Image (cartoon, rainbow, N blue to C red; front, side, top):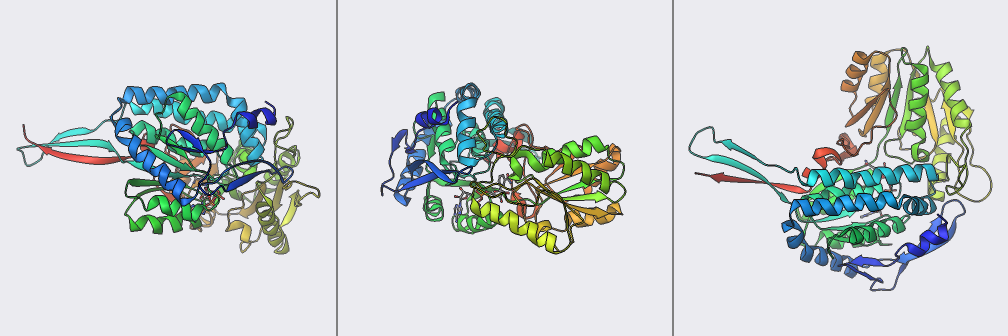
Length: 484
Ligand code: NAD
């Protein structure tokens, strides 16, 4: 689909209580194309008053939605899955245009995003409680699940559709009404998701969407409203910490999907084909702009030369270009600041002795591009091993002893995901058990699956999204002591 056609179809006002309306103070957010740094569209920006109106609309819609039979809520989500799948081209075009990612990545995201609707359409009708005999006798213990209430959802720019549907799906399945505050870089996809939910049959006020230029003030205003019972946030650990403090004032239930610093271990008995293919996926899916992106490669010294050479050849062969060009495999980074950060991390690593096997430059010309890069023999004190790179750069560190590799892998405050490659499954599972992360990929470079509980330990987050666990985040446990 042509970008002009997609932009024509995409709403650009706030979605509040079923109405599309401009922001109360008339402000707008300009959306830029990362391939050119030029503006491509604008949308309304919510003020605090707009955001509070969205919370009030959700509060008004909540009782009706919570009382709607699960089968009907499920049907709305199923319809959302079908509509998003039918319109994959439209969503992929919007995602690629405002985020910059290659169309192939954008299409993959749409498939992933739609699957959350399908999965939670199936979960909506399977939310069960328990009944047990009180051990002391004389009564029964009934445990029920009730919708938690109005949920505020705050999402990042790197997966503008999937991070929204991963929250909206389980929230609606559980019977909650939501206000989505998307990232300022990628509001169009979120507004398109809002329109899709209305078309799928979500009643007015059940899904509200409020992009906001002043995200701090606007989210704080929403969290201050008594009707709000839940905050689900995906983004950086730094902003997550701030929001946890704010949420503490009202003792809000929070789910936090935060930053990562994923280690990728290649043991000496790894199948080289499997290790390189998994590394390429773990590093380059979404151009490296993923919380799950492999951030540090620990490679056994006996296989490091071959692994480094093969990964560099594969990374160096990737076609870099505008996301919307059909031949592009790696698009630009989201903005100038993201590219500057990547360039500085590479410069620091090289200054400390790293060898550039491929890439290592930001090409001249317009657009926020950075070359796919592999760095070998990265020194342990390099900033690139401690910080989230969020770009197409693979730093390699050699190890001799498996225990050392595990110690280095765990030497971080992050704990989202890790990867290990080995032909010995028993050994792989033992290493997986020793790695301090919420998720581990064994001989594979992607762990994300709508049917699986996604989330981190340590400062990578609280709670899980996806799987059966994902719907529980939007429920309260209600215990009833009963005699009969
Ligand atoms: P970010 O933390 O800057 O922003 C995330 C969201 O929070 C955006 O909507 C932003 O507008 C909003 N925000 C920013 N400051 C705020 C404040 N003070 N109060 C309230 N809201 C505020 O993150 P980003 O740059 O958009 O996304 C990249 C980060 O997200 C990376 O750290 C990445 O690892 C993380 N991420 C994590 C997951 C996961 O599932 N764990 C998934 C995707 C991205």
